[in-house]
Amino acid sequence: MGPSAIRYAGLAARLDELGYEYVDLGNVETAVPEATEAGDEHARFLPQIKETSQRIAELVSRTARDDFVPVVLGGDHSVALGTLAGLREVYGPGGAIWIDAHGDLNSPETSPSGNVHGMVLAAALGLAGDRFRDGGWGLPALEPGRVALVAVRSLDDGERELLRDQNVKVFTMSDLDRLGVERSVREALGRAYFRDRQFEKAATEFEAVVESHPVNDYAHFCLGRALSLTGHVDRARHHLALASNLRPERRDYRIYRERLASQAG
Image (tube, rainbow, N blue to C red):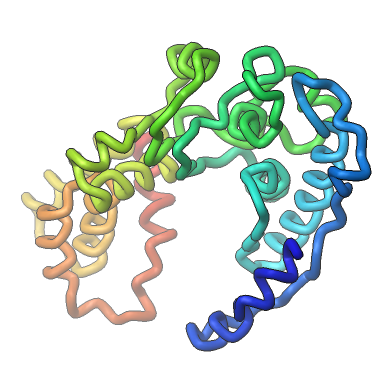
């Protein structure tokens, strides 16, 4: 049933209950696997997946340019390739939090199965080879320093080799057990928003300024959100409490995020 099953399960009604306004752009045309030749055994159905990804990328970029938040629902991580490529067309290379038991960092040369859904993150990083890059569409879509893997349980040998040379943050299931889900996800958010540890350095320097100078609620709010993204939950709560009188309509963190990103270089 594919997409129809998602709608039949009550997606529209649930979104209405949550108070979200949305536009359903319909289904993205895909090839039928049972009626399609798999092709290269090292990258099965790759031409068809790329065609579908390009359709998704066009829809996502159009949606983003219209100031909507694109939400793409699909059956496996292959849909992320078109999603990230479409966002890149509008915003440039970005960051991602990849929540999966596997890394999806294989290439046709390293994949044990030849399934493209296990190569998508590598392709989005521009590391899956020329077969993904030809056509000039939206790849690479991600910056390595702004990618975090969360809940990883198993990595193939080729994925481990790739990670040794890439600045990608990895949170294994053991890390989640040790650090807790909240801290792990906050640190992953910090990595996706800002590059490497530069943002945390900028936030710490900003905290020193706030602590030593009279500042208004905006500064405390900015610092509280910044610290929360880097996993410093207790310090963040302190500054957010000091910003409790800030009017709700002024709590737009994008302004402060851009300022801190500028400080981080």
